[in-house]
Length: 360
Image (cartoon, rainbow, N blue to C red; front, side):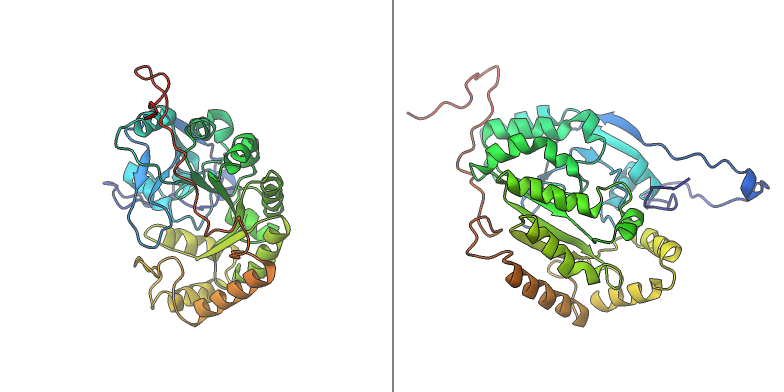
């Protein structure tokens, strides 16, 4: 049973050696077992923890993903293909067979203590959500935050979860030192659409409340309209930005729907099931915005696309931001202000209990 799941099938990953095909075993539909698919979590001893990139269209150089897979089940998630590397399905496996990196804090401590390490903001929520439901049990993100706070290391967070409110005590203290920015991703304000599209993420209104809680604690925060889906969620653009600004957000951004590899057939399957009369129109605009293809992997255009539809969205976004005071140079918490990397202090260790010694 796929109730409260985003994907509708176990699509085969690119690297699997065996193929699956449906088979009629003779059971009538009303006689088939319809048990819910349960979430399972495997505790993983990761070999490394910081991922680095030099992509010219991504505003960070290093990131951490405390978990593999994501129970939020967002059907459009561009990270789904990463499960294929584990010989698991980017479909239902991605949101039901999860991995927790239980040694993340240990690995990060060793990385930050390296003599050649140079502090640069670490991004969270770039692949899977660091505050997905299993974080309540494993608290991997909480442990990482405690370490980064002690070392005064800068970071950014993007999430669809209200669980970030649990860590406001740490985030507020770091915000007072210009060490953190938090973004809440709100795709639409339509609760019915959100329930089918991102079934286990916080509701849209709950995410607005989360922005309000973060802003109330003095944490610089922003709203991400990501992804923007043509002919499905684009009508919510101004509404989401207004709700975010009203809750205290000072920054905003948007990303066009991306359909890489296995995400493409999964999203089309979801569209056909939930919005059959609109499916062809959605995919048609995606193609128009991706140079005739359904996905554009090229730097510079992969996040925003190109063409008339994208130009219109860009103008609507800019006008709304100017009207609402989002991304304003006059706002001291706007996104262009860099986080402070100069405060970083390496973590203490058994060999050096007080951390790196000062020069004087």
